[in-house]
Amino acid sequence: MQYILTEEEYRALIEKRDERTRVEIQRLQDFCVLASQYIPVEKYPMSSPGYKEPWKCNLEAIRDDEMTCDECPAGDVCPCQFKQWSD
Image (cartoon, rainbow, N blue to C red):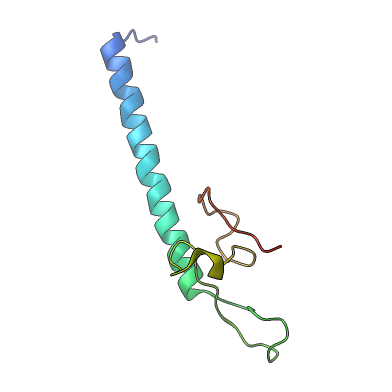
């Protein structure tokens, strides 16, 4: 079966897809920020064995130079385009 769309119908479908993509990316970003704030990770290797605390997210940091994305539990799936890595 083949459907023929007008140019207006096609543009409306593309706009709807783009809006849905933006919404999904924002929801994923919100989820990743929550994960970084509540999932404990071993933050300081020299601290007590087994000591863990939430990593925190640089998007929520007061000063941008305070946080990095190095060990963030959401690092692989986080859609943030402005990740910060330590030197």
